[in-house]
Amino acid sequence: MVKLIAIYRKPEDVEAFNEHYFNTHSPLAAKMPGLVKMEVGTIYGTPMGESDLHLICEMYFESKEALKAALSSAEGKASGKDLMGFAGKVVSMHMAEVHE
Image 1: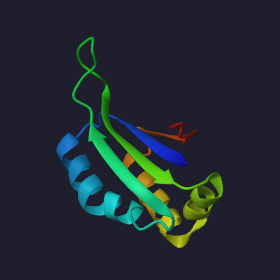
Image 2: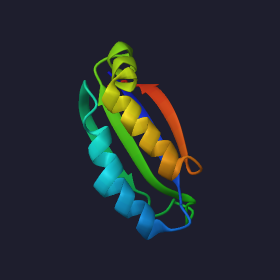
Image 3: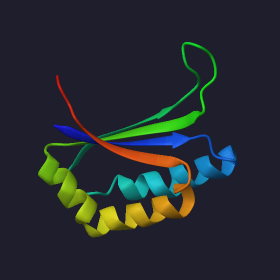
């Protein structure tokens, strides 16, 4: 299993960001073919205090090939275009193998 991880730093307008993320972007991303599970976490701090992060989204796929196919799909492209439009300055994307 692999996952696509989106890490979002705190945006300038948290309320507007959340509105778009939860009502537009997240539903778009959830339509990607082959998506097994999607988890979104709101960052509320670190063991040392405050954090400059806002959200983390983990999207699970059965294989690297399934993830690649999802990103190449019409749904994946629509999600990516939307992402860059509203969060391009605050997001970093990572791919990871899951070890259980």
